Image 1 (cartoon, rainbow, N blue to C red):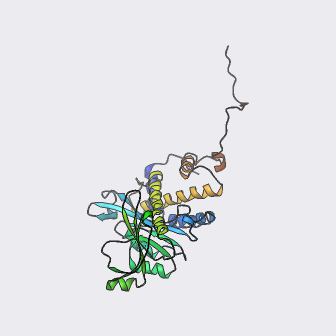
Image 2 (cartoon, rainbow, N blue to C red):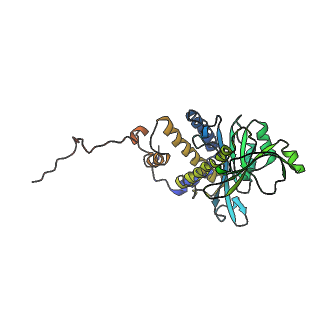
Length: 317
């Protein structure tokens, strides 16, 4: 690779600070498209006939003393990573990175909208203007209803309480701003989680699916939490080489590119180990001139005669 000496932390910090982060972001977009094409034959989630996505954001905490430009609160600094995850393969199809004081709901203006697709959205994204825009584009969303929303019940449907369902209603927003921002009917589903007994109230614009399936769609959103945990634990997002805004962005976008490259390699070769196992092997063999297939070949040498001609014989006399 042309590296003639030891790579120090200072070298990496300088490189991250002076290389434009937008290049890494553009590469990530290309890799997202390539990964989506490679996994296109994966069966749809939960028996659905359309794509299912999960949208959420994670906060990456920073030291206020080292990253004063990322001040979020009085004594906190952070950046916020928004990701739209394709739940067929648990890979991102959209990502955006901003300082921590930017509300995540603004990313609804930028996500790709696919006709007929279902979007499992965190309650923090509850914005009726943006959700109505999603509705008019022909997409469906499932989110949780916040307290204090004024509405009235236009219709109630019977539910099977043995499945955890408590109500399935058609509602309309009742406040002046609500009627203005979302004039169409919405569907409210109340569900008691059998695992912890917690009562959840879902809000969706989809009336065709069964009420229990709507609850399962939102529950499937947990995959994005596992995605956050995976990249933070395995791709060095807890410590940064550079303290500049550009350096932080370079490292986060590079981490996303790494996760996508591993997923692409797993599908294209194909490779049987998990994404974590592939990442571990590649990380210690990145400078070796050997193909990925050879790295993961399992050779059983217990019953083979090894004849190494250049090995010296041992003289036992």
